[in-house]
Amino acid sequence: MHGADSHFGGETAAVSGSVALAENPLSASYDFGAEHPMRAARAELALDLARSLGVMDRTSWCRISAPTAESRELALVHSSTYIAMVRSAGRVPVTILHAFGLGTNDTPIFEGIHEAASAVVGASISACRSVWSRRTTHAVSLVGGLHHAMPENASGFCVYNDVAIGIADMLAAGCCRVAYVDLDAHHGDGVETVFASDPRVLTISIHQDGRTIFPGTGHSTEVGSLAGEGFSVNVPLPPGTSDHEWLRALTAVVPVLLRTFRPEVMVAQCGCDAHVRDPLTDLQMTVDGFTVAYQLIHDLAHELCDGRLIVLGGGGYDLGSAVPRSWSQLLAVVSGEVLPSETAIPEPWREFTGHLTGASAPAVLGDRVDPVRWQPWDAGDGDPDNLVDRAIARTRRAVFPLHALDPFSDR
Image (tube, rainbow, N blue to C red):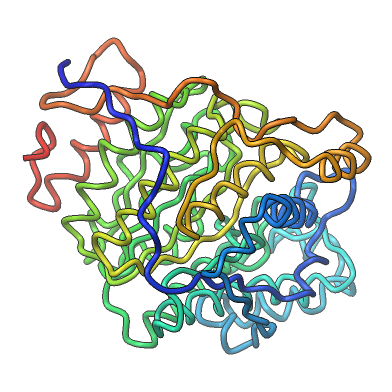
């Protein structure tokens, strides 16, 4: 393989317009308990760290007080039967709940589950509407990104699919091309399922190989169906994939497909459970590697769709370290300037977080002391002895011809 090292610089282009933070206080109750990985404190700690680092003081930020989603909005994706089941979850026998993916170890029920999940959806819808209506250039909902929920059932910590509902709401408002990029270590199966036959939505998921992790799907051969064939894209990566390999895969697939698709708006699910410290996955990413990915997505939005970008949270279960640091950098990127990796984390935040988690909080924002570099994909099929290259090649061969693209070249 040939090609010079690539590295995405330390600063990103200034945003044109404001960045909305969509919040609904009720979403803080979307929490499955102290022994469960899905804790509301994940987003709260990230926002607190970003504020303590001055990110939220930048003039680009504004706040949206998001209403809770109504049943008609949930019904853009979910069946009336399923919505009714979630509403009545505490009064339904467990055997019936299980048929809808509820009351399981992954997605246990709790008091007010319908209201909390609807609040998450409301925040994501508000973020999407803010960007689609051009009230703001970017919008963020860190509580969102619940990409596993299906039309008829809960799955993988996700009750309602706020991502798919937000996209469906923009389509109903007249949007014709939405690009959805999913960075979570788990396949974005729910969003892909909802839009698998819809060519208005290009879904790209880069994740750990489904043969080694939940939900067991997301193979390169899953490319959509009917009119949507070629608009579902999956890049399944082997356990152990590191920053430079992960970014090689991302840049070998995402930019060329987005430039071909020419979206009117982009939605990014920025789950950070691909981090090396995450307890549920086997990838080896760092905060610094995620930051490069965030910059790439941000700059593609400015290049292709006037900056219109909705940013959602997602997975990430290293509560006191990887999640708040990664998402603080995410917030920094969308507000116009990434923070240096060596930025010191304020002591009051470290003390509070250490008390909350029972573990020492990190002293600096990044994980690496060296710039994140990777070998860009070049013409051909990659190194056949490299598992990541083989995964990239399979995805390109499966999808690129469906868009009249040469899988062996970006030219």
